Amino acid sequence: KAGVTQTPRYLIKTRGQQVTLSCSPISGHRSVSWYQQTPGQGLQFLFEYFSETQRNKGNFPGRFSGRQFSNSRSEMNVSTLELGDSALYLCASSLWVSRPQYFGAGTRLSVL
Amino acid sequence: KNEVEQSPQNLTAQEEEFITINCSYSVGISALHWLQQHPGGGIVSLFMLSSGKKKHGRLIATINIQEKHSSLHITASHPRDSAVYICAVRTPDNTGNQFYFGTGTSLTVIP
Image (cartoon, rainbow over all chains, first blue to last red):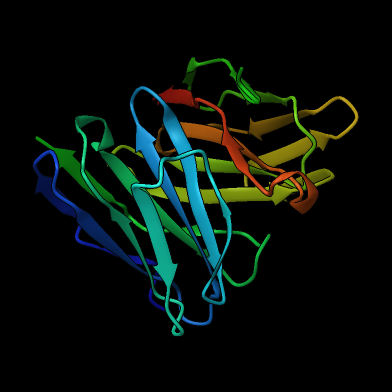
């Protein structure tokens, strides 16, 4: 069974641009969560999706958004990028909400 | 205010040593997770627990709900255990269903 796949693995953008990151969960998994990891703040929860619905959201500005498709694949979008958005963005999938999560390798975003 | 506190922040051990990493939290939880992150970023979920104790190979995780405390133990440590270990808690649906993370414990096991 393939693991959680995140694309792209690396991304360089400039301030003011927008970016879309993609996450393909493990086959059969219906819950997808997104996290941001920075050296200063550590891991922080962005949002969680289940069956195409956002279940909850962390304390991030509205520039951060996401969605989940009917095949459970998920995307997150960051608009009007700021230098502080440079981070490792991790996606995790689980069979169901509140079940063990399996993490992707992450997308490392650098904002210049 | 940190909802999740871990100790120690850094830990160096000799191979075969018994290791304990502690996690205290201040919120009501539905589950607690222990995660392992190797250099390069990949995260593996080691345990998810809401009560009692779980064991997987040389790893043991315990939780005391009343004291809001969890420990991760590694028996007979090995250099391949060198990684950052992160404690995370999930709050129940009726309190926002949020995830909070500790800052991690960086473990180095020396041969």
